[in-house]
Length: 312
Image (tube, rainbow, N blue to C red; front, side):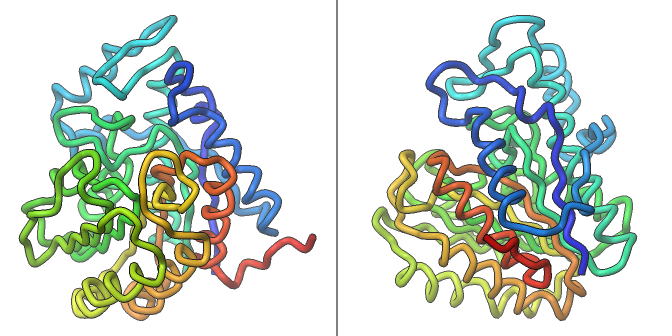
């Protein structure tokens, strides 16, 4: 089983302003954790920029044009109360979306493979026609649409375990039954959506503040696992946000690294017999640097357990 780690140097240059939680050190923390914790150097790859047509499969022309035209030559441009662009942000966002396109191609065209996209800005809040919540383009939606339209897949499962509801992904695929979206998130919490969604192909699990792993595991297992098996996905995608961690400053859930590893293993156990092990994961949230690094490493190790850990 091949593991790809996909990223781009521009993701580290995306600027959000002093004190902003979605800062460039997040990218570096994850990169260092994976470099120290995995022995798979030959699988690293630099993401290309997403083609314009890939962005337009999930975003309106007006949205794409706004992101491109807002990019400043210097300083910061504010697109919504939480979302900023600096001089390198457009390049970073193009490569963050392109990472998923590249990873899907590698996973679907080669032998059994999995991929983790260490990218920023994150994507799952970006709706079809607006930026939102640190997100410019919806990276995972771009990848899913590419798999559907270019590779001809008919069933894709998206599992989103970020502490914030992935409203953008739900917005984009609300009417598309080729996508099974399974999402867990704290509620009430930004963006204050998702708790009333009722759909056979969208399985939302809103959770109260204070939920720990012991409470989390049976709830998501009951809500997701049988449905994932019955759906028989041809590809699995993760929106991997690690801000439900006990140490994260932006929310109030209480998961730890072992919970992320458990969820990754169990979702793989249910879906691997249908996907053939084909899986792509995207970094979303996670704002305590040490907890983010440890959790991302635990997730990637569980994503591809046959890739050996580096010995201390």
